[in-house]
Image: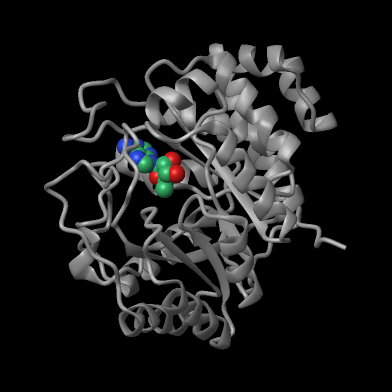
Length: 345
Ligand code: 5AD
C-alpha cells in the first residue's frame, strides 16, 4: 500500500487495480491523506480559493433517485431567483472579497435563456469569474453562455458505471452526460466533474474507473462528496457514504491530478462537523461559501443536514478565516483559475 501511495505521488499515475486496493484498505488512510496534502501544497499552494455559491433555482425536470429537489418531490417549494435578487447576491459576494460566483440550479430546460444570459453578462461586468452548475444543456446553449463570458462549468458525472447511472437517473443516459462534458471542454470552459461516493450498488472498482475517467477527461476541477440519503426520495432508506471514503477518493484524485482545483464539499461538512477542514488537509484547496438569500436556502435541500442555513455570509467568512489560519492556510486573493487549465487553440 505504501508503495502504491509513493508511486502515485511520484508518477501521478495509478492502475485501476492499484486504486481499487487503496479504496478497499483503510489501514494506510493517514498516509494517503498526508501524501495528498503534500502534493496539494507543492502544486497549488496554501491559498484556499473561495467560490460564492448562489443557489439560483430549484425547479428541476429530472428525477435523480438521490436528489432532494427531484421533480417528483412534491413538498418542495420551487423558486427561481429573479435577475435583481441574483445580482444583489453577486454584489454581496464581491463586497466580501470573493472573486468567483457559482450559479447552481436544478435542470430547468424551460428557463428563459435571455434573462439568464443577461445575468451572466452583468456578473462578468462586475469583474468576477463565473462558474455555471446548471446541468445538461445543448451545445448551442453551452456556446451561448460561453459567448457572453461564462468561464467555468461544473457537471458531475455522478458515476461512470452505466448500469448504476441508468438505475439512478430515469429518463437520462450516461452518453448524453459524456456528450455534455465533451462540449463543455471543447468550448474552452474550465471543466469540473465529480461523483458521489457511497451510492447504493457502487463498488470500489467502479469508483476506481471513475477516478481514471477524471484523469482521461483531463478535468480542471473535481467535486467529490458522500451520498447522503434524502427523505422523500427513492433512496431514503439506503445507507449513505462515509466521510472517510469520500476523502480517500478526493486524496487519490489529488495525487494523480496534482494541479487541479478540488473543493472541500458541503456534503462533507453535512455528515461531519469539520469535514470540510479535514478535506482541506487531505488534498482540497477550494471552499464554496453559500451566498444564496437566506429565505430560499432551506428550499435548496439536495440532502438533509446542509450546514450554515442560518449563518450570514459575513459570519461564515469570519469564522472560516479564523479556522484557515489555525491550519496554516489563508484565503487566496486571486481568481483561482485551475492551474491544470489550458485554453483551446
Ligand atoms: N447526497 C449527496 N450529494 C447529492 N447531490 C445531489 N443529491 C445528493 C445527495 N442526496 C449532489 C450531486 C450533484 C450535486 C450538485 O449535488 O452529485 O451533482
